[in-house]
Length: 326
Image (cartoon, rainbow, N blue to C red; front, side, top):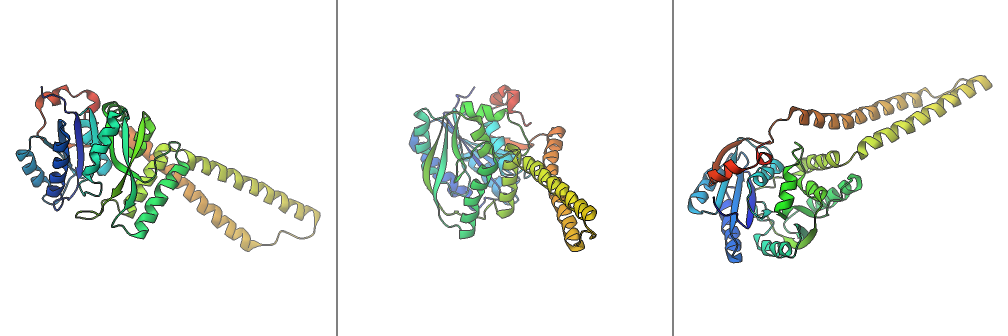
């Protein structure tokens, strides 16, 4: 059996044909300069361009490269999960293919790992090449989640991080369908530390996390790691119930103690519409939780693999059940 590498680097790819060659060159230069045994696992997440063929070429030329092709686009978080399931290194690094997170930061992460830290997450001190709106939404993203979440997530971080094998194994036991790995990594605990770095401009291509996907990711983080929305539903329902009782008492007092009926059909009409709207929102909140229960109950695989390149057959046979595509 092939000796276990010290380091596994997971690179999820979706339509990265313009960047993948440059990414591999920089990543390989950094890893070779560190003098470690390593593997690079590229995850082709259902790309529609030439990414798959370019990755195949890299695998044939470089013995350190492994390629995992998924049967369709399952999304960034699932693609990273697939890489974690297949990684064999004593430590595992997650990095995107667009080079916004520079590979040159990896030696610093490994140094922290050797000091005894089991999670070393990159913390962005600056974000070059991004609009003010993107910066503002990113700033609000973590603050909002941390306001509601039961597990604090370090601010100004992404999935760029190093994780010890013990952390990877712990994450492997968490098979929920709606995933936010940076929150899951916070949840498992262990010794964690930040490594500040300067985020660079995207080398090529477009962002894989536009505003819509960021909002969906935030929703996954809130619903998966917090019951605060359900508590808000309950508290607001109690508040409306109290107001309704007070309103009924007022109406009865005015009707029984005076000759006047309660005026204000307009305010009554507005109140009915308001309550109906609030109820619809609350049903939506409850529906998000119920929908996730339904998704988990179906117990479908997290991902399906179309092709494996560069993986040893011995490794596949010895992969424990927890690393199956569940």
